[in-house]
Image (cartoon, rainbow, N blue to C red; front, side):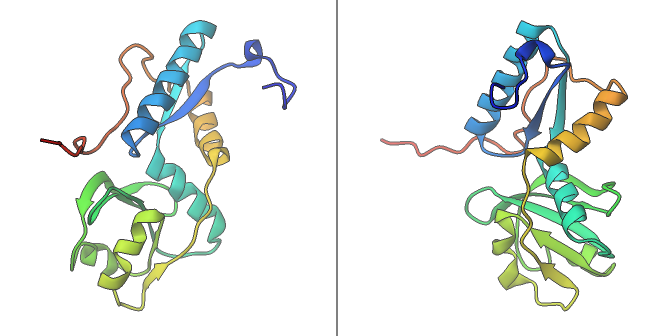
Length: 177
C-alpha cells in the first residue's frame, strides 16, 4: 500500500481468488482477505482462479476463435480445469480431473481449443489433433482486478463469514507410519 500511495482506509473492497489452487495458498489468501474485510468493514469479492486465467488468455490471444481451457497442476495426472468460451461463459464448469486419452474429445470435436497453465503439459502428449493449441499465457492479479471490478459494480459480494476456498478435490498428504 505504501508503494502505491494508498492507505488501507482507501480500500472499498478486497478481491481474492477462491480456488482452485494449492490448499495452503487458498487458505492463507482467503484468511488474509477476510481479515482485511472484517477489520476495514468492507465487502469481500471472490472469483474462480480458472476464470481469471481464461481472461488472461482471451486478452493475450486476440482474434482466437475457439474454446479456452486453463489448467492448474493438481499432482500425479490430475488437473484443475474448466472450458470457457471467449466471452468467459463456462462450457465445462471448474473441476478436478484425471487426464487421460479422450479427456477433451468432446470439446475438440467443436473446433479449436487453447490449453494453457501448468497442468496443460500433462495433456500435450495425449492430444495430437491440429486444432488443439498449447500456448503460454501470463496471468497476474490485474486480471482478477478486471473481473472483480465488474462484480463490485454489480454489488456481487461474497458472504465474508461463510465464504470458503473452493478446494475442488480432497486434501492429499503422505502418511508416515
